[in-house]
Amino acid sequence: MDFVLFYETIHIFLIRSFIHMHFKGHGGLKIAADVWGSNNKKLVILLHGGGQTRHAWGETGKKLAEAGYHAVALDLRGHGDSEWHPDGDYTIKAYKEDLVSIIKEINKPASLIGASLGGMASLLLAGDEVNSNLCTALIMVDIGIYPDPAGSDRIVSFMLSGEGGFESLEDVAKSISDYLPHRQKPKDLQGLKKNLRLKEDGRYYWHWDPRFIRRRQGSRGKGHFDLQLKAAEKVVVPTLLIRGALSDVVTMEDVEYFSSVIGHAKFVEIEKAAHMIAGDRNDVFAEEAIKFLRSL
Image 1 (cartoon, helix red, strand yellow):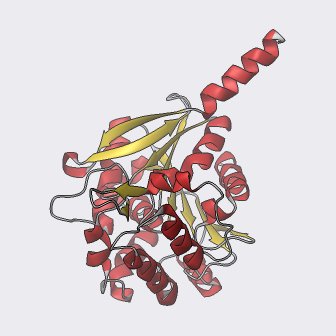
Image 2: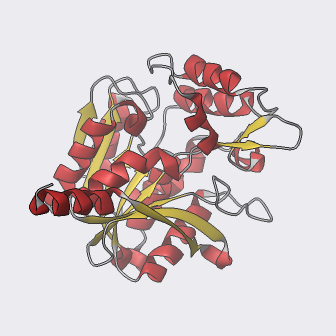
């Protein structure tokens, strides 16, 4: 093999590889993460939505590293391999405080890419005047200031439907297909295990603390999101809102309201994508995110 080609192949392999590590969240809570790219590059932190894990950002993390960024995808508290909070504290403010602790530990400011719940936490930090030096840019992934109630209820119903566990991976796949009928069912179901826990009873359970969704029930009215509005009114960093064209969580009215509050925000809509944009159209999503970051 030509030496230059060999070197380039190894270089790409190293960039696309990740290391798994842990950070300390608020109060010392252990937060799991996958990290791509060099530590001397600009930092981009990726925060998944409720009920998901860091694995939702696998392909995005690789593409960010290839584009020259230091990408860190977190498991939010109570999700994936991160610790469950002993008292079940899964408020948006708690997620924001974890983010503050992690950015301080890494010791350089970050551009934040947050989907759904992760976007809410990112917005709180971007609008936090006390910690304004920690955030350099904000990308909100299919989440506005006031999520559409019907779409939010549908997410909660899906999450609650698996509370009793699943007998098999086939049952898990069917549950996902019923919730996301537009998405093609995976041929290899083994990949689903990354988002599941196999317990001693032989059943598969979602990889998050059940208290997370129980405590969020009944607390999603407009008043619950007023904290988001107060933060949004103080956001001064470059901001991009990305909406899935098939989303039932962010309507065009929500987009207009978001833009009226954060007047400098840019907007992109991705065709053939619903609420989980990175899973539906990752290539297009990553391209738009990187284009925005490079414009800064």
